[in-house]
Amino acid sequence: MNRSAPRVVALVVLVATVACGAAAATGAWRLHHKTPGAPALEVGDYLSMGWVGWDSAWYKRIAEEGYSYTPGIQSSVAFFPLYPMAVRAFMNLGLSVYGGGILVTLLCGPLAVVLFTLWARTLTDERTALQAGLLIGLYPFSFYLYGVMYSDALFILLVVSAFLLLEKGHLVPAVLLGAIATAARPVAPAVVVGLVARRLEWKRARGERWNVWDFLPVFSALGFLSYVLYLRQTFGEPFAFVETQGSPGWDQAPGWNTWLKVHWFHVVFLEGNNAEVILRYVTHALLTVLGLVLVKPTVRLLGWGYGLFILALVGLQAVGTKDFMGSGRYLISAFPLFLTLALLLRERPRLRHALIGVSAVGIVLLSWAFGRDLYVS
Image 1 (cartoon, rainbow, N blue to C red):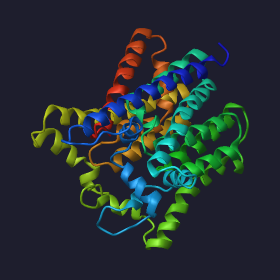
Image 2: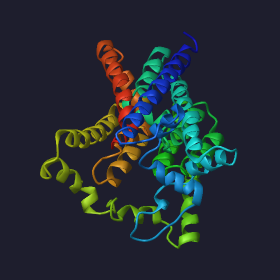
Image 3: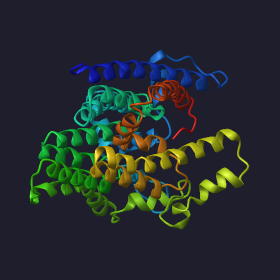
């Protein structure tokens, strides 16, 4: 079975990419034709419409116009710069802003899943690595890796690559990729803690003593710090990305209302919402709990370095959101938990097969819902 797991996962991801793209385009077609007298569009237009929505508009604005910031108003500084920079690079090659955004995700997302499988194979056997690759590749919210104009695919590719290099003993390239990754999402503490902890654990497992070079991963925060310095220089507010989260409409300023999830309780118990809305909010909350529950078995099965990485990443996202929304796709970034899940299900093939089957259906349905412009995550 040498090298078979990444190949099988690559084939599955290819099929998933096509299926999710078709589902999203179908959803976009349905949305478009709900409007009386809507003009007919080309097939390619529906494919594009299916993968752009919600936060895609912010990335479009940044790629085309750069950043803006007005205190107390929703501003583009909430979104980190690496992804729109990549989109702009493709725009300079002649692509449209949406075409560039979709292409960046299509290039990064499938590759991230394949590299995840290679990473998993450094820690476990071939068969379990394959199962882990299927779990993350068909995880319902992984459709964000297959074309959506969001930054998740780029971030996950960089972080998975950093940890893969770390497992192979290539410390400096791992730190470099980690630093680039922290310019894509505001989770630098998780990346730094994860890389430092895993490096120290990796050295100890080989019976080697720690030295100053083993703490080099602290420089993975440079991408994050570069953005902070840019905000300070440009707008006089180094943490404008935090301040703008509290503006009307987002309402996620740090504080007790956000930390205690007051909005979530209102939506689920007090506002009389329909079952679909309640199910959506409850699902994201349960996924957050699942991510935190898997920290302990991750420490036992993969080591405390990866356990700390998951705890920091899931914890940061859980603390920073007022209602857990977004947790579905945020869990993809906590990629070691999918290997932990594969290890826990290694002796439970029926449950594992059922989970993969349900996930395969779910990823297509959520792709269609996103194309319909429904609020998914």
